[in-house]
Image (cartoon, rainbow, N blue to C red; front, side):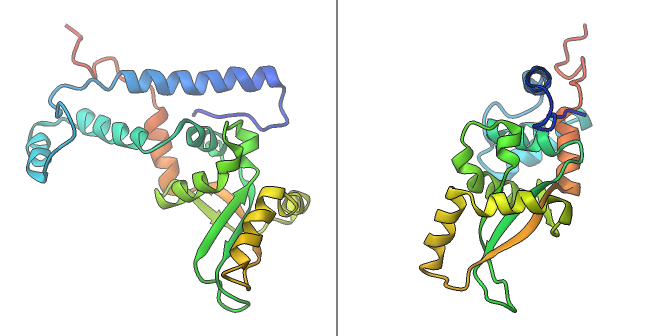
Length: 206
């Protein structure tokens, strides 16, 4: 299982594991030269159906891996790696509703980005929105052990600006303390991405 260590570990160890994570994913991507697939993006469903008639299980799996990787940015992979060992991170969610009805989620904020070493820390809300929409991550309830971390997040200048801007249109917006985790589907997809590429995937055994 590919993992990024917690932010508390030594920098040398962090960079070594970070290198291993990205190197393994790079090798997995380079192995996706599977014969029997389309030369380019499918133009219609008939092309995909034609491919499905000739694909092996390995080829079908590689097509899925290719699509999963195409839907992720490098920073998002770092976030997923930080969650991949079962780690959880405090998260704040802003809902449009009032006291008895939360309504739709307008914004999310977490310290997972800094812990994972992402480059665009100011884009953590966008990254979280994308990962939630793609089914990678889930939100669970408030964890008392992380109370201090929640308070630090609530005082973060970027989060305060986002909440202030949203309150212009939704006066009842207030933060709800939640916990960010890799969801069951995310665990399955991460395991698929991070498994070593088989030597025979490219059909070059002979």
